Amino acid sequence: MDVTGIGHACIDTIGLVPHLPALDEVLVMDATTRQGGGPVAQALVTLQRLGKKTAFHARLGDDTIAQEIRTGLEAEGVDCTHLLRDPGHVSNTSIILVDRATGKRSICAHRGDYHPIAPADLDLDALCAAPILHLDGHAPEAALHAAREARCRGRIVSMDAGHARDDLIPLAAAATLLIASEKFAMFATGTGDETAWGPTLRAMGPSTVVVTRGERGSLTWTADDHFVTPAFPVDVVDTTGAGDVFHGGYLYAVLEGRSPRECATIASAVAAMKCRSLGGRAGIPMLPALSRFLGDHGFTLERPPCGDFCGDE
Amino acid sequence: MDVTGIGHACIDTIGLVPHLPALDEVLVMDATTRQGGGPVAQALVTLQRLGKKTAFHARLGDDTIAQEIRTGLEAEGVDCTHLLRDPGHVSNTSIILVDRATGKRSICAHRGDYHPIAPADLDLDALCAAPILHLDGHAPEAALHAAREARCRGRIVSMDAGHARDDLIPLAAAATLLIASEKFAMFATGTGDETAWGPTLRAMGPSTVVVTRGERGSLTWTADDHFVTPAFPVDVVDTTGAGDVFHGGYLYAVLEGRSPRECATIASAVAAMKCRSLGGRAGIPMLPALSRFLGDHGFTLERPPCGDFCGDE
Image (cartoon, rainbow over all chains, first blue to last red; front, side, top):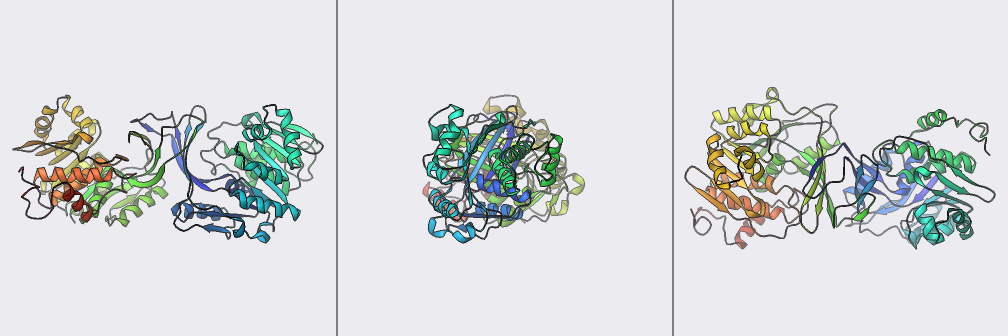
C-alpha cells in the first residue's frame, strides 16, 4: 500500500451549459456527465492512475449513491475493504453546472445524513500500513486521531485544507505536508498577505506548506526553500476537482522521491490535464499521458531527478 | 396489452434548491433525486401503477443512461421487448433544478444523438395489439406511420402534444384523443382565445380534445360536450412530469370505460398526487392511493360509473 486516505466521497452530476438557466427556462446542455468526486477519493484515483496502490477508509450511507461511489473507486483499483456503510442513511451527491464561457461552476450540494467514520471504527494498523496518510477534513475526529497515530509512527500525513473551517485547523497542525487553498490560508493565518502564509502555517506544525492558487500557480514553503510554481496553460473546460487531483499528483511525486519543486510541477501538470475534461474524474491522466504532457513542456520524468526538470533545484 | 407507446424516455437528475445558484456559488440542496422521465415513458409507468399492462416501443442510445432507462421501466412492469439500442450513441438526460419557493423549474437538457425508431423498425402488429396507442411526438415519422395504421385498425390513438412544434401538427391530426398543453393549443390554432381551441383542434381530426392548464385545470371538448375540470389543490413540491402522468391517468380511466368528465377528473387527481413529490416518477400513485385521494375529495372509483362522481354527466 502506498497511500491510505480518510475523506469525503460523493457523486457529481455535471452539466456544461451555455449560461446558467433562469426559472421556467429550458436550455440545451453542451455535455453532461456523472462522476465520482470528493477530495481524498479523487486524490486516490489519481494515484491509482499513476500506478500507486491506495485504500479508502470512510463511511457512506447505504443508498444507491454509496454503491455507485464504491463501484467507481473499485473500478480504479482503490482498496475499499475499509469503506463502511451507515444503514438507512443517504450519501453525498452534487449537481454542478459549468459555464461554457468562463469554466466557472455553480455547485448544488446535497449532504448525506450518515455518521462519518469515527475514531472507534478506524483500523489504525491498516491506515498506517502505507508511508502516506491523506486527509481532507471529512470525519475530523477520526481524521485527527489517525493523523496523530500516523505521525507517531513516522508516516507522512498529508492534509488537503480546502475550506475556511475552524475544525480544519487542528488537522492542518497535525499534518506534515499541508496543501491548502488560498481560502484556507487566508482564514487560518488571518491575512491576505501571501508572504506570511508559509511561515505562519509552518509554525503550526507542517514541515512543508503548499498553497494552490488556481491558474496563478502554487506557492511552496519548506524548511529551507520558498518558491512559486506556475500553472500549465491549458484550454480549460472544467476546473471541478483540479485541487483534488493536484494532491494526488503531488503524493505520487513524493512516493517517487521527487524534490518539493518537482512535486509541485508534477502536481500542477496533473491538475492542468484534468481541467481539459468535463467532470472531476474523466481527465485524470494515466502515467504515460502525464509523462508525454511533461515532455511537451520541457520536463522529463526520467530518473535521475536532475537535468532540465530539476535544474532549478 | 392495454396500452402501447412510442415516445421519449430519459433520465432526470433533479435538485430542490432554495434559489437558483449564481456562478461560483455553492448552495445546499433541500433534496435531490434521479428518476426516469419522458412523456410516454411516464404515462406507461402511471398505467402500470394503476394496474394496466403496457409496452414501450422506442430506440435509445447504448450507454449507461439507456440501461438505466430500461431497468427503471422494467421495474415498473413495462414491456421493453421492443426497446431498441443504437450502438455507439448516447441517450437523453436532463438536469432539473426546482425552486423551493415557487416549484418552478429550470431544465438543462442533453439531447442524445441516437437515431429515433424509424417506420421500418416498427412491429405494427405488436403496436396495434392494445386498444390504445400513446404518442408524444418523439420519432415523429415512425409515430405518424403507427398512428395511421392503429387508426385504420380501430384503435384509440392518444397524442401528448406538449410543445409548439410544427411536426406535431400531423400527429395531432392523426390522433383520436388529443391531450395538449396550452402552448401547443395556442401554436396549432394561432390564437390565445381558449374557446376557439377545441373546435379548431377537433376540426383537424381528433374526436376528443383536452387542453391542460396546470393549476387552472383542464378544458375538454367532445362531439357533444365542452367542460372545465378543476385541478385538485395540493401542496406542490415539483410539477415535473405532471402533464405526462395526466395522460397515464386519463388512459387508465378510458380503459375502465369512464366518461370524458370522469377521465379528466381521474387524470387531474393523478397529476396532483404526483406534484407532492420531487421528481417525475416518485409521486405517481398506485390504484389504492388514487382511490383514497379521490374518496377524500368526494369522488368514488366504485362501479357503476354514476352517482356523485359522475353526477354531472
